Length: 120
Image (cartoon, rainbow, N blue to C red; front, side, top):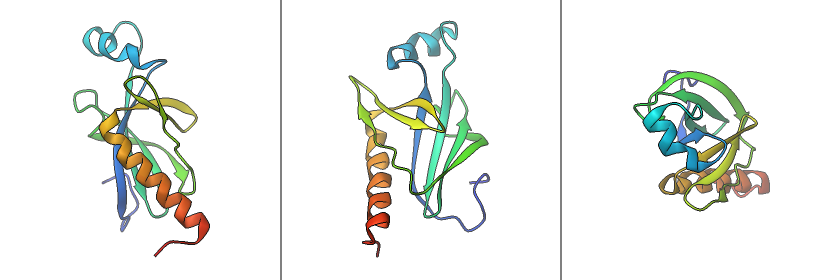
């Protein structure tokens, strides 16, 4: 990815969306009136967590710019909702669709393993 340092090895990648509540997604996507929904592409490497702005049409899968970097030791700790899981990225509430939560949980497990010294 163009927004990561050269030589970065991506361990996990997932997309997320910002909104006050997951129920805003459909009307915001269809009408773009009620609330601004932003799309995020998140790449987890051995060294950091990169949060990038994603395009609306790609659902966040095509990054357009780097928003910020979080320490690799950051635990994302997804909290289950009715349909979407809530995570905090760069201090902002984001929602992750259930199929992508596997990547979030894998990133958290690697962070836990690294802090306990069990990394291969």
